Length: 126
Image (cartoon, rainbow, N blue to C red; front, top):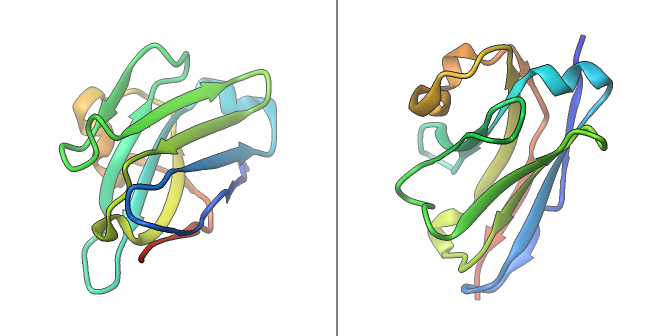
C-alpha cells in the first residue's frame, strides 16, 4: 500500500512562495503518476498539476499555469510543487495522489487516483 505524506504548507503573504513536498513510503512510487489537488472551503476539489512517472510530462490547471511548477526526484521518492506569486484564492488544503497510468490532460481529474495523502494547508493572506 503506497503511502503519501505532504509537507511544506503554511501562511504566506500575497505574492509569496512555498514549496510543497509529497514523499512516498517506498520505491514503487517511481512507477506512478502523481497529481496535486486542492480544496478550498465551500469549493469543489480542483486538480492543480500532475507529472508522469518519469517526470517528462506535466500538466497544469489554467488557474496556476505560469505560477506553479511540478517536479519529481525519484531517487528521493518525492514530488514537489513550487508555488510562486501566490494569491488569496490559492488558499486551500493541498493533497497529492498517485495513479498507475498517465492520462495527459485528464490527469487533473481526481477519479483515477487510488492513493492519497492527508494534505497540507496553504493560506495566503496579508
